[in-house]
Length: 154
Image 1 (cartoon, one colour):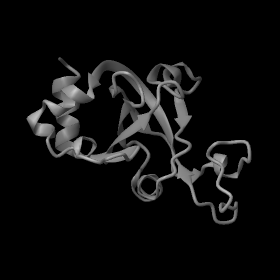
Image 2 (cartoon, rainbow, N blue to C red):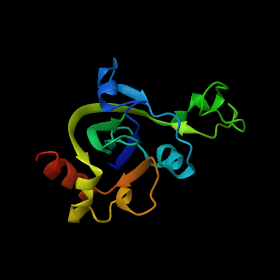
Image 3 (cartoon, rainbow, N blue to C red):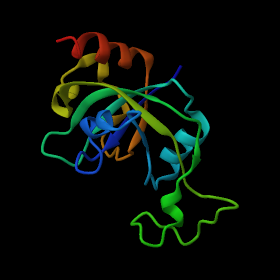
Image 4 (cartoon, rainbow, N blue to C red):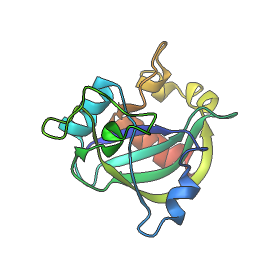
């Protein structure tokens, strides 16, 4: 089992929004970074754990727990001329951009980026590294345990 931190802007899709959906799942669309795409396409598996992270807001941080709910498939926004995620170089025969569905499991207290930075066991966490802007990053099993067993229980 792998673990991931996946960023979403709450104005676009918050943990509350996804929990309110019929199957509590959302297609993780609009990823336009090759490394993040490769994580979804090549490494994610159904059942992997996800830290649902709110970004681009007043207080960014982990807002809930989720899981990968599908195998990868093409992101249809790459083909939609009206979408801000449209990619003129993409074609249906060889799509450039993939996504997975994510199922929200529960909302948690917000664990802010500042609080994450204060945790010595998380010092090497990818999201805390200078210059990291990826919307999807791997989380180690030790980091996952610290966050879910210590910070989410606090």
